[in-house]
Figure: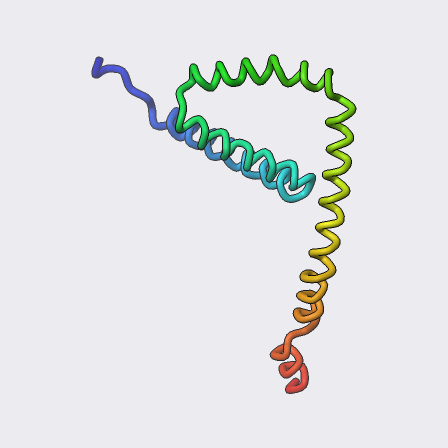
Length: 131
């Protein structure tokens, strides 16, 4: 068994491939997360995080059982109560828009007024006067 080994060139190629793959993955994650629909990406990350917490406290058989029960009951419930679900979804969407506009009006607009976004800082103004 001691005759089995990996050459240095093979390990260098494998390391190069793994490095390239990880860089490509990081670029893809940035592209999906920052450039396109970041909220979908954030929701997926939060969902996977919650799934990992649930998975850490239960075993695989329990998760498969719960997934099977949910997977078989949710479509039936959706077909039976489709109209009510959509109606409640629209109501929830309207309430969330109203809540966001209230928060935006009371908090965010005041913060923007205090911070003065894109305004030059005092140090920058003093440096310009000195020159």
